[in-house]
Length: 148
Figure 1: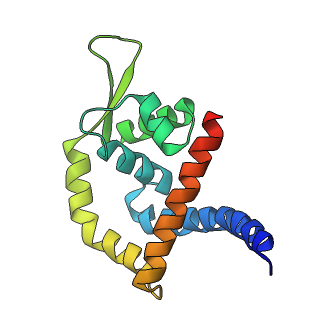
Figure 2: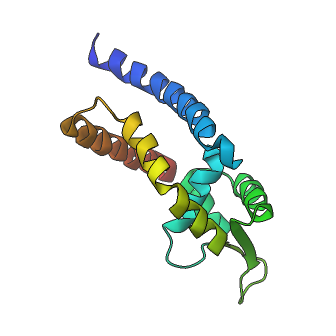
């Protein structure tokens, strides 16, 4: 298989990987009545020092503002996040993780760690390092394409 065929195959397998990750991620979280997309939203919010704007989170997730707001509303109903109006501009909505969220994830941390370790079992440190680097480079190229 030549390089271009490998690139096409990787492109297609990324979609397959995303679908399969969603299926097994949802199954992993099912007992807690949370989806992998909701987990991803919480993870993204946790990367901000302050309460991020919905638009900031949407950008970081590669999603629309509407999709993020829909996910956030469901998480707010369950007590994992709050959606608050910005103090200086009431048109801006900010997302804030709750104490319930922190307690929940600290209680499930070991099971989540095992899930991730199982997912990457069989890959060498070198393979994981290359995968990490390669995925980040593709994401950088996507950012470049989006800006031009």
